Amino acid sequence: MAKQRKAEEPAPGSPAWMATFSDLMNLLLCFFVLLFSMSTVDAQKFELVAASFSDTFSIFSNGGQAVGEGMLISNGVSQLNELDDYLHSVGRPNDTDQTITDALDELETQKLAESEALAEKVEEALAESGLDDEIGVTFNSQYVQLTLNGSLLFDSGDAQLKEESMTVMSQIAKILDRYAEGIIEVEGHTDNVPMNGFKYSNNEELSSARAISVFHYLMENTTIDPARVKYSGRGEYVPIADNSTPEGRALNRRVEIKIYNTLSSY
Image (cartoon, rainbow, N blue to C red; front, side, top):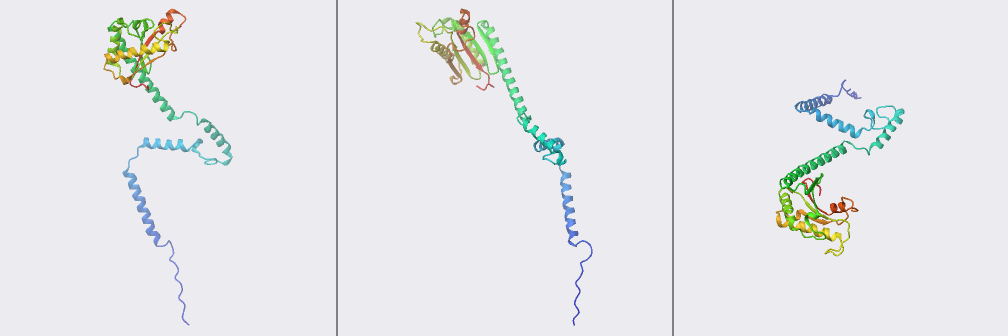
């Protein structure tokens, strides 16, 4: 009877392929270490990125993201309280909101500074021509406003520019031609005394006609693009003084010319 061959027992120790696999892992490790050593890491940027991830994904103290993470389940009530506080604070301004607010505040400051600089130039020009007492100059972050009393430009109940107003209008035209870079708005205003026996049936028509007269003068005596000039009649509805007194009514009869700055939202 043939003798059976005894099965070979595996050699003691790790399989032979493990040596090759270990060599491969060592080579890969050396490769990545070499890549890392050749790279440069901006520590400041790394910290910002890490902080961003921390703020985005960690809403509990100590960086926890879920009940029981990093602490005992028995502390879950405390974490839930933190979660409640977090949810109530979601509506509060965050860093992005604050950045936007700061940018808007900075823009408002720049707009106001531009209007102030323009107002100073206008006032200097009026002073040189001796009209600084005749024309009021005010400004805000949107525009510089020139206020001309109605009696300086028009006869009562009329919308035709008086001959005596030509000196004033000529100087206004020069100022606008020289300094106005944005939109120009001409507004006519009246008092609240009803129109009786005059050419115009109401104060709205009179104020509109006066604004149009100023507009036509500016178009004929400046190089300003008509598309940049708007005009309107506001009638008696935007008073700046008490209409119950003669002095107040005289102040309300006026023409306002608004010179918008280049940063204006208008």
